[in-house]
Image (cartoon, rainbow, N blue to C red; front, side, top):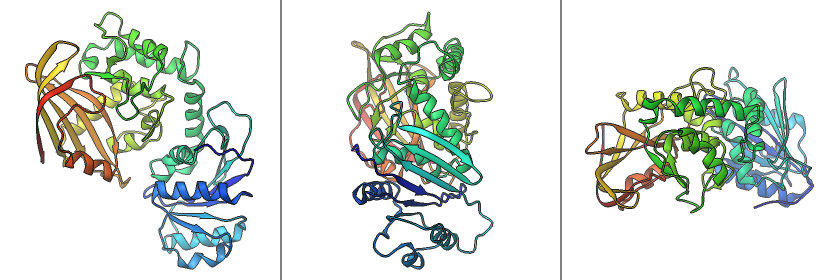
Length: 398
C-alpha cells in the first residue's frame, strides 16, 4: 500500500537494546494516514495499539503494562505526556538505556529509496521518510533493527546511511566508488578462494515466494562473472554463497519477508550467529561478508547447541539430466539472544561426496519454525538448485 499524502507523521520511540522495548507515538494531520501507519506497524510487531486521539495521551498511560511495546496514535502529543508514558513503561528499571527516535513521513522529492534524511543528536534519532515511496510494511522493515533489538538508537542513523547507500544503487552496482567498490573487492576475493567456494552449493535467483527474480539480469551477470574460470551454469543459477550475500545486498525486490538486503544490514542474523553487527556487511573490519558468514555457520553447526533437524533425502536432479542421491538438511537453532527469532541453516549433502555444502541461512520466527517442522511435503526449498524427485522426510533434535 502506497500512501499519497502530505500529512506529517512522527514516531517517538524508546529502545532497550538488550530486550527491545520501545514506544512509537504517531502524530499527523490526517487521521486516516496515521491510523494506517500506527495500525499496520503495531500489527507487524505485535505491539499494543492505542488510539489517544479523543482522550489525550495522559488518559491512557496508567492502563499500559510496564515493559510493553506500544504504538500510540494521536493528533498532538505534548513532550511532558510522552515523558510520562516513557517513565511509566520503564517502571522501576531506571538504569536501562532510554533513547528517542523520531520518524517523519513526509511527501518530498527523494531518490526513490524513500529515505530522505536522518541524523542523530543527543538521545534523538530523526529519520524522514517519503510515504509515496514507502508503505507501512516497508517502514516497519526499516525500523526492524531497533524494534527487534540488535541495534540501539545511537547506531540507527549510521545504519540508515549505509542502507541508503545500498538502495541508491537501485540494484545496478556498476564500477563506481563507495559501497560498490567494497562489494566488488570482497566479491573478487571470495570468488578466488577455492576452498570457500566449495563450501556452498548452487542457487536460483528466482524467488520461490514471488515467482520472479530478485536480481536484474545485468546484476546477476556482474556477480556470476566473478567466478572467472570456475564452471558456471548461467542465468538464473549461480553460486549460492555469492548470490545469497552480495546478490541479496543488491536486490531491490520486495518479498513477503521484506528486502533481501536487510538480512545483512539489520543485525539480526549477525546477532543470532554471535558475530559483530558489521561483520556481515560490506563494511566489515576484517575478512569478507561471505568468509565471515561461512566461518560463523561452521562454528554454529559444529557446536553443541540444541538444534532441530529436518532431513529430506532421495534422488536429486541437477540441471536437465544429472541425478545424484543426497539429502537436503534444514537445521533450526533456537535463539540465545532474546530477539524472538531462531536461526535456520539450509544445506545439501550428496551421498557420493563427503562435503556438506551450505545453501542459505536466515532468521525465522515462531510461525515459520512451526511451518517447517509440521510440513508433510518432501521437496526442495529455499531456491536450492536441485530438485528432490522422490524423498523421505526425517525430523529429529539433539
